[in-house]
Image 1 (cartoon, rainbow, N blue to C red):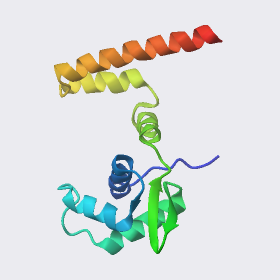
Image 2 (image 1 turned 90 degrees about the horizontal axis):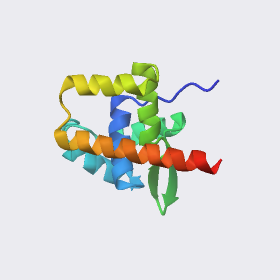
Image 3 (image 1 turned 180 degrees about the vertical axis):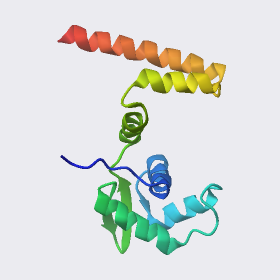
Amino acid sequence: MEEPRTPTPRELAILKVLWEQGPSSVRDVHRRLLRDETVGKELAYNTVQTVLRIMEEKGLVAHRVEGRTFIYSACYSREESARSFLQRVFDGAASQLMLSLLRSETISAEELDELQSLIRQARKSRSVREGQK
């Protein structure tokens, strides 16, 4: 059985850049990370390059070559990350995740409305799919 890919915090920061910007060079990722206050201004270009190489070995990213530049793309999606988190922290129980979020009282009224809308859409989509079977 394949071991689950769990990104480190720094790898997750890099993945977030790739998810938001799409395929990017080491320089582009480095520049974006330097603007992120949680990462800090002391992050070296060579560190980003090394982490991307390690991430490729882990199957989290892949690269293609354009001229002399490596362009990296995420092979690990936000959905996989969310699924992994849900499994690790809540044993796969989405209701427990939602309960935890609701108890934390950090969700705004607008976000609650959006969640209700998303749940309605998911139910509708599921009933359409099940009706087609």
